[in-house]
Length: 260
Image (tube, rainbow, N blue to C red; front, side, top):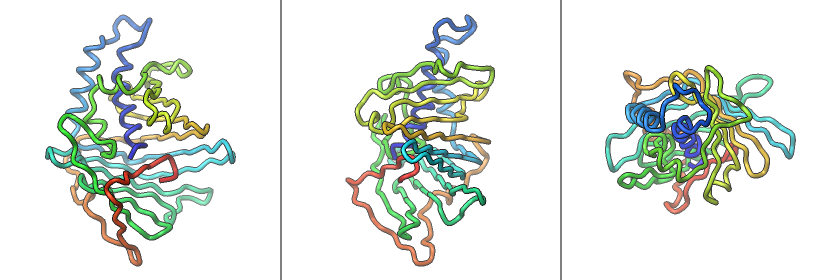
């Protein structure tokens, strides 16, 4: 799921950017210090729960704005042959409030990705390849955050400070620019707002090639909870009148902004 890959890779790439500021405070950490701290922090995160996730999509062609809100959770895998587990659930927000009938939901069990398609009353089942040694699959959702190293992020993206939004006492504002054609097809630039005290993401903004803007806001993010029930990430029960639809293994799921 490339959208989530981009989000969490941007989070990791921010660790590199923190060490690349020119004309910075002389007390600022060195490159090695930042990377060591960042990778140590990420390696220590066993689970994550974002109580509130908000995605805002601005369509420049039709001059519309669409908002979805919900929550997300992640459980790191300690099994080499199984990917990490994750769940994202969002509902559309209208002037009348939250519309429970219009939603997006994804459950990653580590071996399968379950993609809800409410309009068709179908849950699409995507088989996920096992992660290769030392690598993380593009389809492994939030595991990008814990599997990619800073040196890999620097090879994949141009990373630096976002000069249009100078850093303040609360956040670092990091600009992410794609290098390879596949990433350029998804976004032309991105900005990550990183909480200074925790290094956790507060916001990720993407500018797509068609001019549309997608902003993800993360509120009340908790890490290393005492208990995050693994049953949250199991194969879901079929709602009434729904059915499973198996997706062939070579058809990788693509989640792009508001149009999965």
